[in-house]
Image 1 (tube, rainbow, N blue to C red):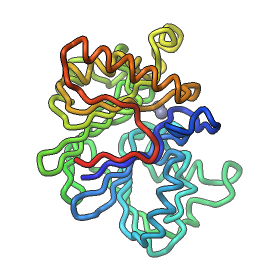
Image 2 (tube, rainbow, N blue to C red):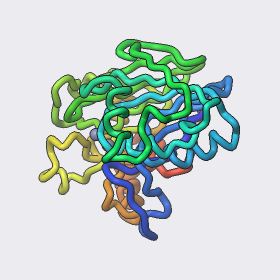
Image 3 (cartoon, rainbow, N blue to C red):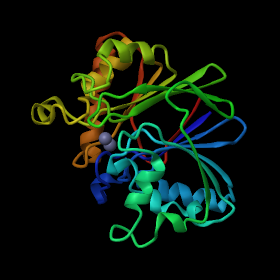
Image 4 (cartoon, helix red, strand yellow):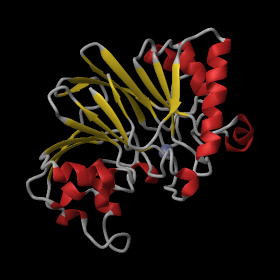
Length: 279
Ligand SMILES: [Zn+2]
Ligand SMILES: [Zn+2]
């Protein structure tokens, strides 16, 4: 399986010379199965560029999974080019929406006065699957959901193919238990021995004094999870809108020092728009 990042920023897209290295688009991850099937996780603004690529490749079948319905994870959806081609078939997995089904959510937001094109005018054929509360399969990839510790709830996922696993926990607050969320030990158990862990690391300890209960983790806590679960590769995710490239490089440096101090060999980096990991 190949994991590619199209949007790594949290909360709001950003642009400017201080964000060129890591990128400014919000959450969107593409997973390509060994048979070449496409699974997309979240429709943040990063999905726009992915849509252009999929259209140029004449890709017709697309699977779309959501973690939750906060703006930064759905705001790119109306700009996803394959929606406007009648040949496209999209299978949407939308059960984490506490606000109702994925269909209702988009028909309410992609609608005047919020947006000029009505959801009902989309040309692609969209089918909806409700079956993602328990383990499910897309092509050769087994997908195991887990509740996030986040306001308004949400789901994280473990993707496994041929014994290799990728755990994606965006928007997860490790040191405050939101309704429906797990405790730290619960997440350690879920991430145990994963080949790749991508985890929310939005805040610094100093910032967290003011942002506790907002639904995001301090990078040190995300690293503590990666070390406790003995994952092989750890990638920091959901970069704060004010986190410049220089500041992110510094955070990665701090993480690597902590890993060294612990005598561990964990591979650690910050998610970068356009980067891919082969598992
Ligand atoms: Zn978010
Ligand atoms: Zn969120």
